Image (cartoon, rainbow, N blue to C red; front, side, top):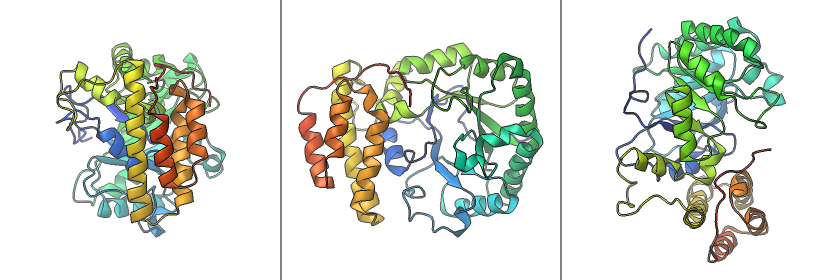
Length: 362
């Protein structure tokens, strides 16, 4: 089996990456998070979950899910699927249009729409079938001009007694050609509730022959270093917290002695509740500007659709703001993008603060 062809898992690689999230991990969020990356650092960048049944017939770049800027690198699109032809056609097409650094196979999505097609987490119920899906993806990359590694994102098993079975499952995926695995150690039944069981990441890492990315309950820079220390994961993935606190990238880089983000060379990463509250306001206004620029003006999507997308973004991360409910009201009552910009700017004229942690129940 070839080694992973990138430096993403070298000892000096940047240790954090963004999670693929439906409705969130689009180009605008990727740009926002990239703004906080230390200079000279690279990591992998996901897309939203892409359905392999649709990609072959889609015009890439015409939807917010498939819109990618020419400057984006190290993309690892996440595919949902289980059929050879659909996976093959999707990978070939994605490679033609984007600068790919990998393909991630979703075996963790617990929603009913995925389950009824035997996608997502349902693949974890049949090891041989799951391994065959990885083989489909690996075979699809063999005739491409560059090496494109295949990764898999998984959910947790239900109990400690099943950990050996999980490791056996990972071995099957490895033998099929998977080059790294991301484990989100919550069960399908938990969805996003409850506490992530990092012990499963630790155990899997101790037994695995390939790199392991740990995912779950990463809300702060401290959490990044704690997970790395406690589990020995090769990289840490964060989802909802990076929508609220994308400067985690900056905070982590600062602690590693890396250069500040471009344009912030003479600044320190925000750290106090008030500093983070002010940074959230700047970040949200930029998010709105970018959504307006790319999704409305370039993709010609309706203003109402993009307002709902921004509302969903704030609904996801407002729980970290001390007056988050008031912020959601401000966002939800805005009827146009111009109104939204004005209302958000007015809201953040008053000092705002962020909680370091919050209970993620939704």
